[in-house]
Amino acid sequence: MVQSSTRESDRTGPGAPVPGRAWLMLALATIGFAVNFWAWALLSPLGPRFKDSLELSSFQQSLLVAVPVVVGSLGRIPVGALTDRFGGRVMFPIVSAATIVPVLYLGLAGHSSLTALLIGGFFLGIGGTAFAVGVPLVNAWFPPERRGLAIGVFGAGMGGTAISALTTVKLVDAHSMSTPFLITAVVLAVYGVTAALLLRDAPGRTVPTEPLARRLAATVRLGITWQASALYAVAFGGYVAFSVYLPTYLKTGYGLTQADAANRMAGFVLLAVAMRPVGGWLSDRLGPVRVLAASLSVVVAGAAVQSFTPALAPVGTIAFLAMAAALGAGSGATFALVALRTPADQVGSVTGVVGAAGGLGGFLPPLVMGSLYGEYGTYAAGLALLAVVAAAALAFTLTAVRAAAEGGERKQGTGRRHGHRTAGTTA
Image (tube, rainbow, N blue to C red):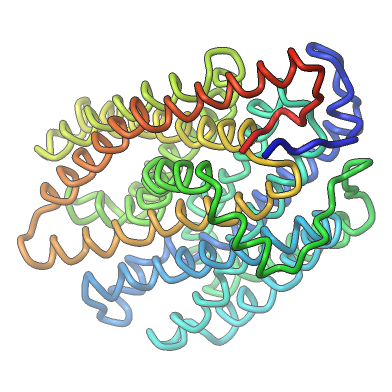
């Protein structure tokens, strides 16, 4: 199927300037993504503290930080479909406002027991669904040849987890357990009001008319949905897994203090965040398949090296930073692929499914790592498993994904020769 569109952004020719309003919408969406991800990641830096104060096992600690991840991931499926229907202007304020409730609960009352933390963490997952709101909003504002960069810039909003890593423990130590949660709730409220006043959907945005269930059924029949889901489960899933579990890994495996481990995790996150738009930009120029192949190759090498638990300085640090850069670039390249190959009125739905796969990819590794460490007293097997999974994803990229991408390019070329206009996407 070739999806036609009357969007202003698609009427511009290759290399045409993007209107300033599009960049404003991109900035607002990126800030909203960062703020909601900040809230989504509040429990991760406090995992070691809760382990000590509540006497949690390694598995219970892993479960605590993983619950918001899985809820936020699965929630992206309906939220992405709703964004296709109602637009980001409606959905961004709603998601931000809904996230305030669990943030306040956790800060004021929900941190005294594991059960209370799991309940709060479950609803905290709402913040993780913001990703499925921003991608279709940004995608509609930009022409096809700029979408890799634009969605990569938006994806840099995942740096909200770095804000949490850098501030949460320090605020708790300096003030009280409720302080970081109260501050985050205020920021969410300010953003929600700002988004309601300023955020706009692209002119001529393609609005689906079919019922939600039928649209989701159509989404799962698209080949790009499953290809991008598999790749994002490794690229973004690896990033999420490290961003929530790295403090525990460094504290347990290398004996670092909680503050030092959180700071190093923030460095990992910031590098991955910086490389995400770079991955999108390179995909616009070299093609997403090449960027994905290079990124996954680096992850394979980095995970294999780290499975031997080398000294943190310099080998371990180099391995982790290389993986951070590769996971960030690979995440950006995955959604450059989505932007190129997804029909315009299904971007939100596909983003929801792919985003869910990425989040679920981040849910399992912390549980596996915690279980393996509890059983064997080492993280080596978990990192070796990451290397194997990344190698499988690399092989998949170089075969099935490359073949599908080349087939899509041939179809687009045929359409252009016959005078058909496309939105830059085929299925």
